Image 1 (spheres, rainbow, N blue to C red):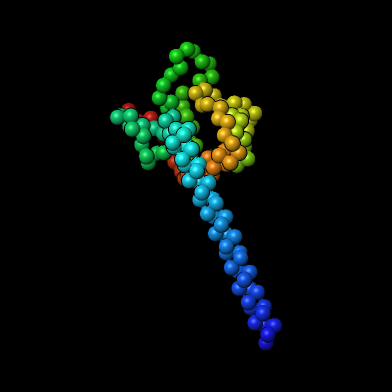
Image 2: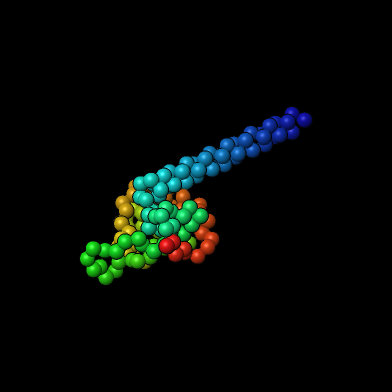
Amino acid sequence: MKRNACSFGFGILLCLAITSISLAQSAGGSADIARGKYLVEQVSLCGDCHTPHNEKGEPIQAQLLKGATVPYKPAVPTPVFADKAPNIAGLRGWEEADAIKFFMTGIAYNDLPARPPMPQYRFSKEDAAAVTAYLKSLSPAGKPAAQGK
């Protein structure tokens, strides 16, 4: 009888330990997503190009980071200048490691830099992982949106 009670107690302790680890990991994930949201929305200002704007110039929140026409043109001719910013919500087509590398080096999975006006970010590995976690947490549903008039 003592052995069954001991095994039962050990089983409960094991379940509690696993639950604690799972909660800590999800809390870390939530912290990464919150940090990534801050970096995307307040530091890098990704929505300025990747979110369509209405006729008043306000971002259309329902289409956050779903892609848009770049709202300005280069002052001098730039042959590779991108006139459209892609849908980055969900980071479709990007492996996590490639996205982190991109935000750390500015070099994409195809070994090419992003086309201007996309800056070549130099995030730390932790910040690049946070940005990636946030973007991957967004719903990728929907086609890239056109800029509002």
